[in-house]
Image (cartoon, rainbow, N blue to C red; front, side):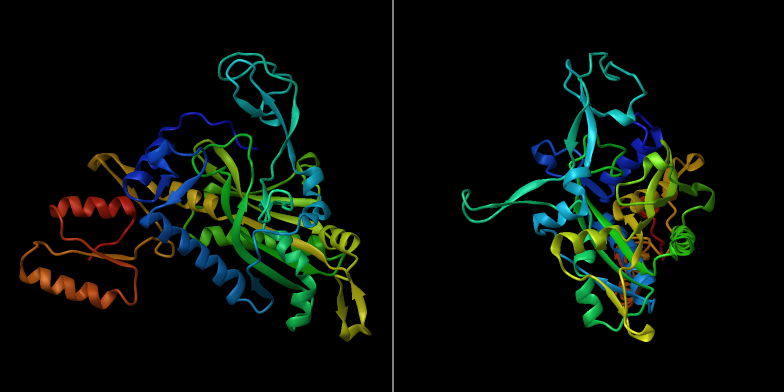
Length: 398
């Protein structure tokens, strides 16, 4: 559970730096913005792309047992009925009668009846739909009510037979994808930790039923190691097992990879045992045979169990930025100490003086580096200011 947002000096400085150096901007800022929606600037989009590219390489292209997909955001509404989201994807919400602020009931102390912000009385809890609704159709009368997907996983499950029939896969195997998801969160905050529009890096690993515990353990350890490979400090990461009352409606066991943010340990990835729940639900609702036929075992028909790894791109980026943030108080500067694997730009080149032999050499070096590295050329301002700019965006200089 994420603590309710309060003021944290490190986060405030990180947010200010993010805007100043072009990592993140509030969406539609010139119209006073829209709450909990952000745009990625030139530095942020490079950092984000590096994280996504590393995930795709490490989880998809470098492994023989995992294939990639890119499924549609818009899906038939029956998908979400079958998955259980229409019935179960709700949060208990209370609202302050005085200031109208809304809270998730499970984020408040048990029995609290007054608003933490203004002290006003809270309403009785009611269920709050977490899925965004929209219309599909050219006229209001004939339009179909559909949802913006709250997760990318269902696109994989409904395509299970397509993948099996079109690819030479054998159990165990995985299907992964990167994509946008949308959740109509009651409470948002802690910068980009909880937003209404976000990106997921999800992989569904299909296994024989009965092998669940073995593969859940394997993927939990693998995913924890991946965050260390991004340069995140080991002491800031941990694996936490879910208690029974925390489990989602589809899960029988789950581990979270958590990072120690300034506001406490919070989830950046979940590794869940989804069992046969999803495939069986879609079998029941669609009346299609979503099975794996084991040709090496006399044509045995199997409804595989699933271990899911579900990571948030934005949360991972926030963990990477928070971990890289360092205040050099002795020199009154901020340094983003990114690992070279994720740094937005790998090298910066600038001459000692604008008009000099150095400038010609530096420009030539920059042109030679550009095809091979994300590089930046800077000849504006004093040499000290240029170094300070590079410190704040985590770039190396030459």
